[in-house]
Length: 140
Image 1 (spheres, rainbow, N blue to C red):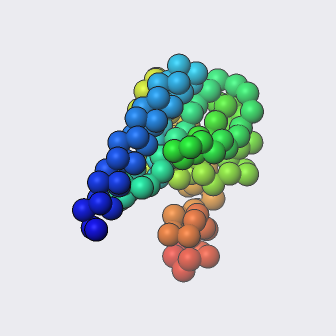
Image 2 (image 1 turned 120 degrees about the vertical axis):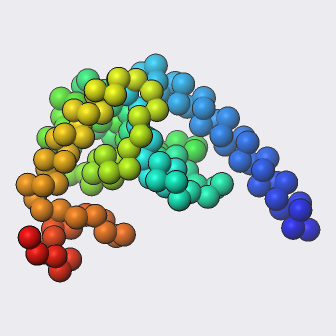
């Protein structure tokens, strides 16, 4: 019985990984850079974990798109300051991020702005999100 479950898991894993590669190829053709973040970037994923991707574009709308194998956060560089004021996902993407394709400099631009944003606001990452250092009992 256990062996049947493992075979099914392997089959699902192979199918999901193939679908991820298709999605990545599509995104790489549409974005300046595509960045992996979340558990797969950190290395603490399971075979059933989804893929969290940041697609950096020169302009457009910021949006979160749920896809069959995870989520894509579309980040237009020309709206980065605005997005930082309303989405903590970008902070996670920078903290975990690994560039999968495209121009690494595009990610570096985002990374520099996000790191400055985190410093200026005195934020720290916890298991439940980003909080001001003082709110989690840390002092400068």
